[in-house]
Amino acid sequence: MITKQLATLTPITVADRNRILSAPRTADAHRALLADMPAMNAVQVGGTASVPVLPNQFTVAAWNVERCLFPEDTAAHLSTIVPDIVLLSEVDHGMARTSQRHTTEVMAAQLSMTYAFGVEFHELDLGGETERVFCTDDFNALGWHGNAILSSVPFIKTALIRLDDHGHWFASDGNTVDSQQLRLGGRMAIAAIIPTESGPLCVVSTHLESNADAAHRQTQLRILLDAIDAFAPDMPVLIGGDLNTGNHLPPDFDWRNETLFTLARTRGYSWEFTAAGNTTRPSLITLHPDRVMKLDWFAGRNLSKEECGVLNSTMADGKPLSDHDCVWCKVNLSKTEC
Image (tube, rainbow, N blue to C red; front, side, top):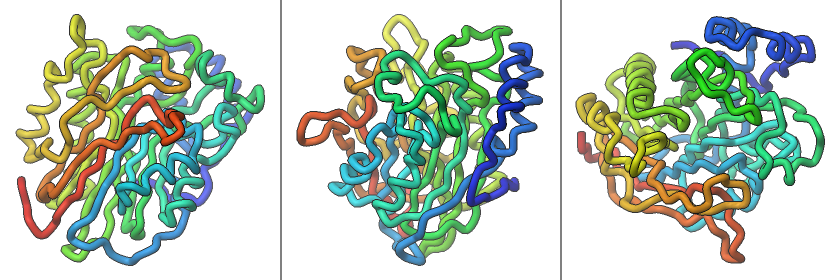
């Protein structure tokens, strides 16, 4: 698996945008557009690592930062757990609602980390009504929204793993498309191999589909696990992110009804790296302030858990940084669980 690593992602041009907007809303059209946009098929790397190699015991945080409206505050909020690796989802880059900033780059600089960023979606509009109050312009400079890995150690290699290409938020054939969130792209993961005292380790930041059922998410996880096996064969692996467990599973929307947990176990992964408890809360832009769910998880292979927990995403002054709390775990490579 080879993904281009770039210092800067190629912007989508006016001609590209016009082509996207005029394309038929079909899966085939979406696949062709996705393949033709270089930024949708590359990983942007930047920042500076602070140490050369991870010790055998280290801390990882996984956090859906809900656009990352406040990147400096979000980075500072992590100081209570002092993570060595941060797995981010829903980070903006060149979006009006986050002041056109590269929110991953801002966080990485504040935490003295290197970063790998990949585009989940090219946003074709400004976002939902609750987000537009934060817009500093009436346009997006780049329109990137995606996943990232922040690391205190350098990357050996990285990969962008697409979990679907049919245009779940673009193609109207078989999908209900949100008219305020017309997007090119789809759910994905960023994987990175990093050096540790015990040898190479693979860490993965992922985000599964919210607007789908358990079978759809299980298929996405199977694609991810297959890709990890090809990218990092026989390595210890830690996957973290927003798996959207329980979404579109009426009547109780319970994560226990997901089938992806059993799938991962059959592939040698343990879920014990995830602390008990729900991970959602009201925020400044969430459309579902009353919804309480457990969406955020870690799954690990060939490593062991020392501790795990959930970091409340509300600041001391009461400002919520996200509609997701941050999950974290302390991992030990010198002992193996799976």
